[in-house]
Image (cartoon, rainbow, N blue to C red; front, side, top):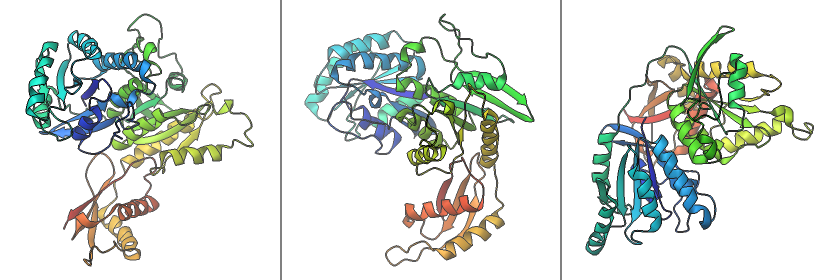
Length: 433
């Protein structure tokens, strides 16, 4: 899936545009600088084209003095990783030095850049916006992300540069290992394959974009997609969440099951959550591997059970997940992770016959019927599993629009109780009979 990244100074309206593009109020938008948190990724559909949108604004964490450097870093990463870049400026503050710096960086790239002048919501501002033509971008658009005027034209032009790539049909499981730079991803892969697979040197470009390794041992066969194989320039970016999330998006897209490695000494961090939500949103299978468990002291007080409880709370509400404690260094429970991954792959491909599904779910719905809406009784006639790559179920009923989330969660829990979908997000749709 192609990635579209939104870059620009704080407070030019990146998050508002992001929400418009993905069609939901997802970012936390506030007038203070740098308030956007943890909601920087979504998917957009326009004219039959689907693409990923990344709001870089959500990644600037610190005080004003680091903004400039952080924004320049983000622009560089966007140039490396994104397919199309939206460079956002704001007519209300006019052209600033930082805008000029960003423009200079973007003019050097071969990637497609859209200059978007925001807050153009009246005639005098339209006249003022003309000064931005001096930045010299062919694709320049004036819009107001608050009212939405001009976004349609921008999207029409933007999707011309986005490709719908067909997923390659593979017969063996595609497994991606993701996690923080220090979680031990490369060591885990080397331990599995029994070889130093990732040749890491300081010469630029020695580690490839992402490395696919074929695994076939102990009656287990799969492809490992390794995000650790990143270009060496990434050393500079190592602690930038934005970089890791961009890499993860690309690798997760190609995979069936995602193994999220967590460093036991650090616990679950916001970046782990961001990557987890991406995998969940894309309906991938998920296994949590807690590495470096051998380094945890006082295991009487810091028990695995307590740690697991904390992990599950962090990832709630989706916590029907395998959590495996392991140590790559001590070669402990590495195969346990492989077993869990293969089981989740099986669960993701599980197909429940319609008759069996209805036998079970009709009883659940009789036990607790959907609440009526304004005196209208809601009745669900039957349920069927949809023929797609991940578990999705359609419930046919008389008033699909009036079934609320709590009942949807009840149905999901009932499906999980009766059929093994551990580690796999389930989608539920209500359709008019």
